[in-house]
Every structure is written in structure tokens, then in C-alpha cells.
Length: 229
Length: 86
Image 1 (tube, rainbow over the protein chains, first blue to last red):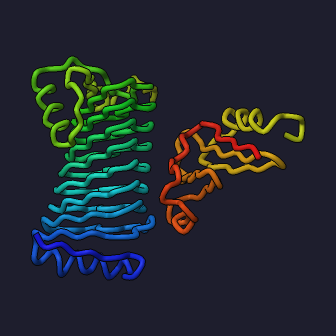
Image 2: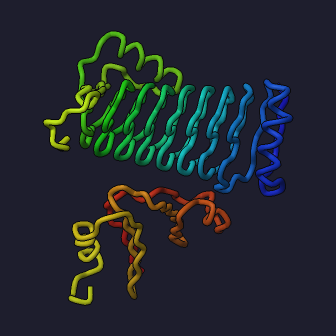
Image 3: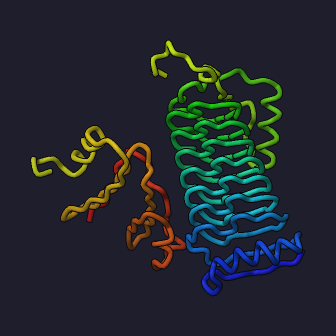
């Protein structure tokens, strides 16, 4: 695999993203390292080819947003909205992720080794998210499809207004959101957890996870609820 | 605080009194305090080394600081008091 290195201290981000979209993506199968990201926003957004991108430091907002096929690794922390709207591929954060990690992601796998802040997986539409640490409050809010695996603890209002996404939590849950409920684990759940843990490279025992899914009480309008949920 | 509350007490009361989104950075003659509301909509990030504590809305603004690569970098949790004393 051909390996290229670009330095954001020397090359403008717009040029780097253009290069990733037009030159590297055309050839496919390439590996590129981005030096000195220094918290810049929108690094490696909108990729659409199976290339490897290594971001060597902390990145800013929307890192690897809208990703398709690419394998993006961030050797540091990321700002809000990492891998938002991802369609496929893989995004791996070695540090922590700020708010709204994996927001609206349709497919692919997002791995966060550290903690994820509030609203992780908000409006998730089919991607898988594995978090090595804790997730903040309101995570998986209105998540429609996909799976979220939390190896640490979850904050307040986990899975508020969930649709068909499923959340697995190894640690404690501060509180569940409206319409989210703990459910019994099935053999299929243990297989799913095993698969996600193995993809993310975390050594935990699937038996230690709890399942949270929608009670489906909000699927239909209930006039008698008097807006009390 | 004008009525005699300590910085920490005043901020704790602020959590009960204030409604809405905020990140507050407050300084007195010998203390620096940072708090965020329960929803943590307003961004904040902290870099701490033996030499300094730096606070900004995003890492971009801290990236030029000396030795920031070895700093302890974290996002302050919502509704938690972060207080540094001189």
C-alpha cells in the first residue's frame, strides 16, 4: 500500500481534503497520514473510497463526517460531530470525543477508545458505535437504527425517544430517557456484543452488558398522556 | 457573591437558579472557576500542565500553547464545578 504524508502546518486543509477526494480516492487502497491537525475542523470529511487516513493529533469539529468506505483513525481527541452522517467505513478515535459523536450515521463503525460526551449517537440511523469509556447524557436520543455499545457508564436520559436502535451498557446508567427500557438479553444480543467488541478490540465479557431498547409507547400519539412522558 | 457567598457556593446556587445554556468562566483575586449547564451546549475544553491551566471553546485555540502535546486535555462535565486556586 502506497503511503503518503501531508502536513497541515504546511498545506491548507482545503487542499488536503481536495487531494483526498480527487487524487487519493481515485487510486483507492492508499494510506495517508495527516500531521499537525491542531484541532482543525472538517478534516477528512466526505471521503468516498477505501483508503486509510491517519490523523496524527487532536482534530476539531466534524472529523470524518459523511464518511463512505474510508478507514479514518484519529490519534488524539476529536471535537463535536465526529463521523456524523457516516454511510460506511470505519472511524476510530484513540482519545475522547466531544458532543454528538456519530450523529445521524447511517452505516459503518465508529470506535471511541475514551469517553464520548453528550448526545453520542443522536438520531443514529444504522451505524454501530462502540465507546470504550463513558457516554454523556442524552446519548442515542431518537436513535432510529443501529447499535451502540458503551463499555463504561451512561449519563442521564439514555435512549430518550428511541426507535429501533439498541444500546448495550456495561457500567451504570444514571437514568433512562422517555420510552427507553432495560430488556432481557438474548443469545443474539450476546453474539452482537461479541462481534462489536471484537471489531473494536475491547476485551470485555459480553455477559456483563445490559440491553436498552424502546418500549415503543411513543410510536403512536396518546391523547390521554396529556404531554406527560 | 456580593451578598457574601463564596465562589463555589454562588456557582452551586447558579445551577439551581439559572435556566438555559451557558458556560461560565469566573475569576476572583485568587480563584478561577469554570461551569457548564446540564446540557453542555456551549463548548469548552481544558488543557492542564504543571505550568498552566488553559480554557477555550475548542482545542484549535490551545494548539499553539507550549507543551500542549503533553497537557492533560479534557472537556469539563456538565453541572460540575472546576475551581483552581492561585
